[in-house]
Image 1 (cartoon, protein in one colour):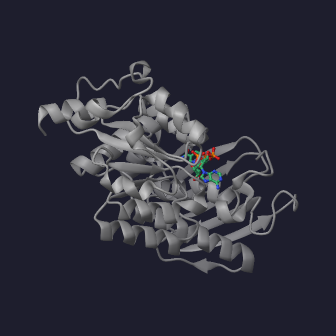
Image 2 (cartoon, rainbow, N blue to C red):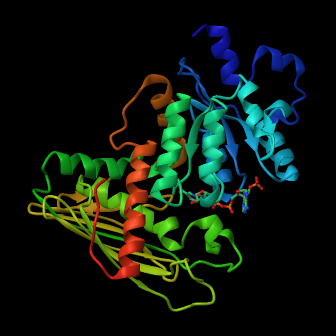
Length: 372
Ligand code: NDP
């Protein structure tokens, strides 16, 4: 890449934009420290300026290979605030009605969809049709069928589809995966994943079936589902599940409060997991093998992740998950880098197939066979 373009990309702006764009607050924006990096910069627009969008935007200040350059939002006042906070030019600001025009914007490479779950499907497909790479938050969709349609749309458009599986880049998690692959735990026999918190405001979108697609399973149980796969290194072949509900007013039909579920793996290993919106202190993974174990608590929160194995404390570095995730995603997109655990749409469809199977098993009481 020529060095002037590279320099301008690092500033997050093209020569034309430098001449034209009135950039409020540009000077206050903290420049990304990428002085020791000379490769391409992934120029990202965030869609949905909510609480996680804010966390990602702040974390991206620390990225070397990725930069926040645009926003897509339904709230004009947030757009103004973000423009001044991150130095975003007017020409990189969109709303949900007009963002298809992003296809004519050469200064944005990717859109990171951080809106309510039920909106991801249509939004990602519009991003793909606009010819931009799509990064999508978890759960990628609200069922496997919608997830597969997103994968297909991105393939047809020739763009990447990546999902915000930030734990796939977390150092202690990666060390446990390394140890498991090296046989240091022996033959894996059992995984336990406990994921939950007590949810507040009953009017929020997470408790609205159309926007959330379900309850705790969509939001937090998915960490145990995905974790059971990367911790054991296998994909489940059967699922059983049991739902309990103590508050039928807050958790309406189709919004699960608590589900316990079990997986069986081809090797004979099993997993036992719990997903809930009604208990605290649940952020724990336990992996058991014939020669050793790993336990992590917290296991999937924003950090620091803590844990130990039969060999002692895990002492890998503490990272800002979203900073590492975005740099690694830039490397996946530009350098074809292969992450240790995939973060693509196919990976997300596997989790969605398991969510579909868990809901079916909980509803029917039957053991459900799955093929991922
Ligand atoms: P918030 O409610 O805080 O933000 C969602 C944003 O989406 C809103 O602020 C709004 O932004 C936009 N939006 C568009 N349409 C709607 C609508 N109909 N109702 C509500 N908001 C709407 O949610 P979160 O940021 O916590 O979650 C967003 C996504 O990120 C979810 O898919 C969630 O699962 C995922 N997430 C992932 C985490 C992780 O660790 N990987 C952690 C937390 C969330 P605007 O006003 O700009 O349009």
